[in-house]
Structures are given as C-alpha cells and as structure tokens.
Image 1 (tube, rainbow, N blue to C red):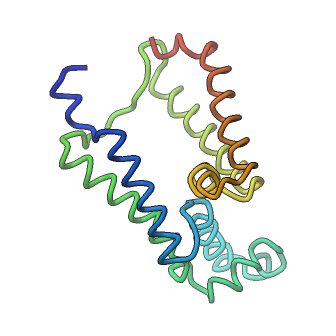
Image 2: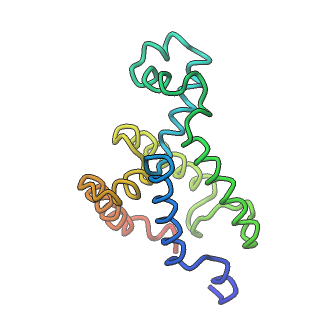
Length: 174
C-alpha cells in the first residue's frame, strides 16, 4: 500500500475514540447502546405484518416488536442508526475517493463464488444474531463496554474462530 492510499483511512486510534464517544452518546441520549439487529428486526416485522398480519400477531417475536413499533418501524431509533451508518459510509467513501463498485476478493476465487460465500456468511451471522439476541456490534461494543462476561466470551470466540479458519481459507486471498 502506498503512502497516498494509506492516508485515505482514518487513524484507527482516533476512529476508536470516536466510536467510544458515539457509544457513550447513545447511552446518555437514548438510554441504551448500539446495535443493528434490532433495527432490521423492526423492518422485517413491519413487512411481515403488512403481508401476513395474522402470522405476525400470532408469532411471539413479531408480536413483541409490534407492541413496541406502534405499527411502524420508523418509531425505532435503531432503524435510523442503520440508515446513518449506510449514509455515513457512503459519504466517507466519497470524500476519501474510495467510493466505487467492486468485489474484494483474492486472485484464486471468482466473483460469483465470493458473492455466494458473502451471502451465506451474512445469512448465518443474521440468524445467529437473532439466536444470540444481539449482533456483533451490540454484543461487542455495547456488551463489552458494560463488561458483560458473555459479550467478552463472544468476542474472544469470534477472534478464535477467525484465526482457526484463516489457515484453511488463506489461499483464497493470496
């Protein structure tokens, strides 16, 4: 990586401090931490209720969200958090000159295979987030900041799992 490419990214320590201050602001202003899976669940609940209201009202998970949503997902501030992350990422990419459409992959894997793996991995993470009652951002950032033992075990397990599997997939990226 050349020096000019390196300057396109924020200093990770400054970015970490900014993320920590954002998490603190979320606790102070909203009374809870950051996370994304709840926002997606609010949107899915709204859509399911629109298409199949009987099913949504008879399902305990959907019904619990329906009680909190008052019939619309934009009542949930976490939906705006997700929108803000997407818009903020696009603005950052634009101003840093990194906004383009491309598929990041190694030379030994095709674009189609990479997209299939990304879809499978994302689906598994989304399903696991519902089972764990929180996504990685909620578990690691919010739970870690609260010194929740389960969240720390979760994050250590994520890193251990990534290191364990990296050996087997490293040739895909080199």
